[in-house]
Length: 399
Image (cartoon, rainbow, N blue to C red; front, side, top):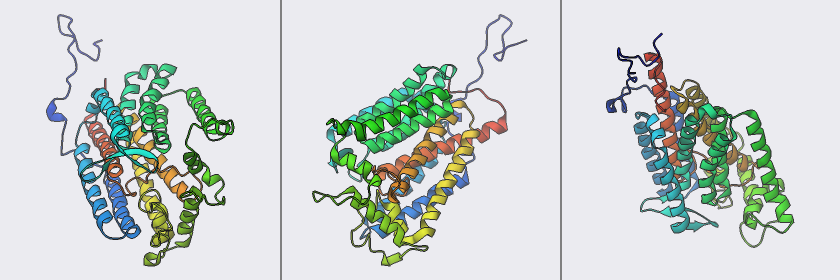
């Protein structure tokens, strides 16, 4: 019986036809309207929430511009062949690491961390773009080693690729997002349960050691203010630190804002943000700001839009054209879900204060544009998965 690659009379194998450059972009590809509308809906909520949390129109206008550019980026990326990203993953990885290092060297320190470089129109945060690129690189790596997915070398390789840029950012909250991306890629990439169990236990040991055991022994891995931010939710009633903005103060003000919003919000009567009691009301604590202004109805709408994105993302993962698409979708969904859970959780006092933005809602150009890049990749996986289903079985082109 002839093999999948048919043989000529001379016994020479003829490789299957690969798609030409004309197949890379196809504007006729389908797209997921629910995913698109949920993302745009979150951007609309963001513009309204940012406008209510800030005085003047500059933040509102900039956020609207970021959202518009982000939609454009997602539209373009959704028409591209996402498999090409896997083939250029090493140049992508080099760019990601170089940009993070450049920010660390030349960036502007803010609140004790150097995470961005000031550009003419916005502050570029390489770590935000790096989240999406890390998912691409890790997915490509695990696809290359899919026949050895049960080996520790594969698991260690994914961790090294993702956690190296995470360590270079020198920001604990951002590093946690990278770790979540690695976990999502490993779970769908086929890592054995024993690997995941060992990694989970190791993560708990490291966290307990860094935040509790080592400081008690006089060894400070993190700066004192970082430890305070991460542990404030465990003792929210601790006295304020007279030396600066105390994380317990931030936490209490956020909880007051969320609670005072009630069912339908206080609208223009919201005082926590207007009187500057709520710090970082347009970024880290935008969820609390929206809760005070629009109440339970408002935050429920925001969380419902995230639920739609996760539902469609899981659907896209399960119908991906190839293994790379499924693993990449898993990494992107882990990134989004982790950020939503941590940001919303820290605003209501059940998660550490980490500075992780609320995707598409928190103010910031880098975060919005990078998240839309991820949405565009999900759309590309959806589009080509649907197109492949109509054509029938095809070659996995991520080899």
